Length: 483
Ligand code: GLN
Image (cartoon, rainbow, N blue to C red; front, side):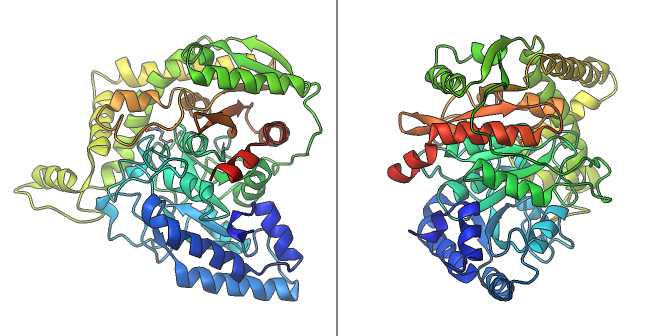
């Protein structure tokens, strides 16, 4: 078997048993990248020489069996909004095209210290704004299951790279679903951790109260392995918490696990093929022994509106620095205002500018109370619903996306249709909760994702439950035979 197809845990076993070397594993990934990336465009840049050097260094450690890190010799892809000292990091925007990072994100330092081989930076929607990876200034990524379809977004490059075995696992960021939704559309596992679990230091900020970095991987076990390396309190991000590390155990069944099905998530998809796919998956959970009951989150229908007020407000202040003065290229203007206008017009895409304008509007005097304050109040209600639900059930189950991957271009000129693609994922960000997606089957040959949402800091429980479900769904068998 091509070693690029290995899961992280199988690759680790093979490396420790000296059945393969890190150099072979890295070469296998690079070979697939050369063959497939021109079509998929999952990577914006591949660090070929650097990856080979890192792999050789890992082989030295593995041979000596000394200082072998938890990711020793494992090829990892990294979303292009995570700073990597000395490298270009663009957030898929023209405004950062020539930017070189002066320091590395905490998560990059951590995976490097754990022995990972960083393969390259992956494509994304510009500044992580989007659900299809089509708003990248450098071109769209394609879905490996059907290259005429989107991979989801904004971490579409990372999801496609994992799905097509162009890496062993990847990092992404999730502000309103950008890890989970592309993971679902590409048939891989994706976790958005609890807000504060993973340091955001060195992540190009989109909306700081919602952003979290997390793993995209081939299995739940792999996502857990990657999270255990990147999580933890960080002096350089004061929103990180000093929680104990995530701990999870494999379970044989789901006996005693109380699973809630939020009605509000089901409503929109009841008559769609996705509704049937989720029903089938829930039936499997029941067979595994889970106690399934219906639950109501009365304010869930407002979460999308809350998100699309708060997120642009935060975007407008986070992106204020990209003005042609402090970062990036400058377009000429007769006065300062004109300089800003020309620079942003020339180097920022439509979606980024749309959100800066919406956010500035929502924060302006006279509208602040009507929009921003109202949305913050509604955010509290959304959070309270979840708190109440978790007194009755251990975990909630929902679709990750209302549909499977759609054709390239279908929603690109219709921002509202694009925003609706986030309806199942934004609430976890609004409420700061951890959520994981696993592939649960195919609909017309395209992957469907099942999402588990847990209380804050319950990643260990989510991994145990999702791992058990994953083994029952046997999705990887489907994948191997269909690709
Ligand atoms: N698709 C959502 C948006 O466009 C989420 C993006 C993200 O999570 N970074 O805002």
